[in-house]
Amino acid sequence: MPDEPSDPLRVDFVTGVTPDKWARTWAERRPDDPLALTPVDDGEAEARLRSGASTLSLLRLPVDRDGLHVIPLYEEAPVVVVAKEHAAAAFDELDVTDLADEVLLQPADTVPAWRDAASPEVRERAAAMPSMSVVDAIAVAATGSGFVVVPLSVARVHHRKDVVHRPVTGVDGSRVGLAWRVDDEEPRIEDFIGVVRGRTERSSRGRAAENPAPESGSGAAKGTGRHTGSERGGSARRSGGRALPHRGAAPRRGRGRKGR
Image (cartoon, one colour):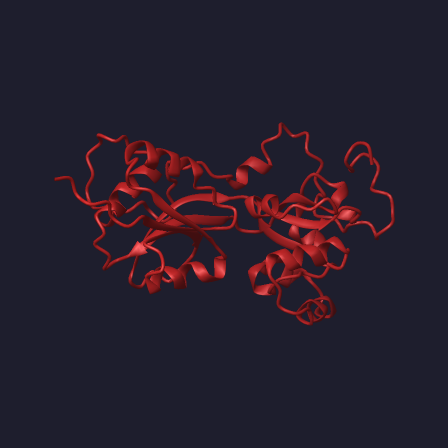
């Protein structure tokens, strides 16, 4: 008699990660063994994995590797999110130090270059802002009260008509990886790793933990690398590391976006 269907393989994924392609490949290979995909916040992904609420997690790195196997997959490009009428919206690309006079709506330690460039007064104003979710921070940014730095995929998920996002330099990209518990002997973990890493169904498979991808390596999954924001043939108008014009002032001639 055939084996009874097992429980679905539980896979968490954080905001901005799109597991659809992998889920389709899994369904083609194992039509009678569905995945249980669960969207989770970045802040809860690791805890859910360690507690056993999920078997695998597509999350942002770094994480505490104690007790976990982790395979880095790809790096996401960072962007800055500002109000549509903000002076920064006039540029195609910014350096984060261009925003040294603006309030950062997230912990300063997450954007060290801004922290080091901002004046004590601006840092104090930023520190006085309440802790908020990414969604709330983007809503505040829409009022012109500050800015947020997030991965491009997150900016797209939470896009609003009253904000824009621009590529930003001076900020490290965000890495996405696949993690699972060291002591979890679920045999389907290896099969899912094979799907994510682009193995064919008939390819040989060893335990991924015995030969993990290097920390700085890239996986088979496509991400939005930081280089994509600058590969535009030199046509992008960058801020050039100069102070932004005051709010309400016209953009510098020849440097702003066309049509503004």
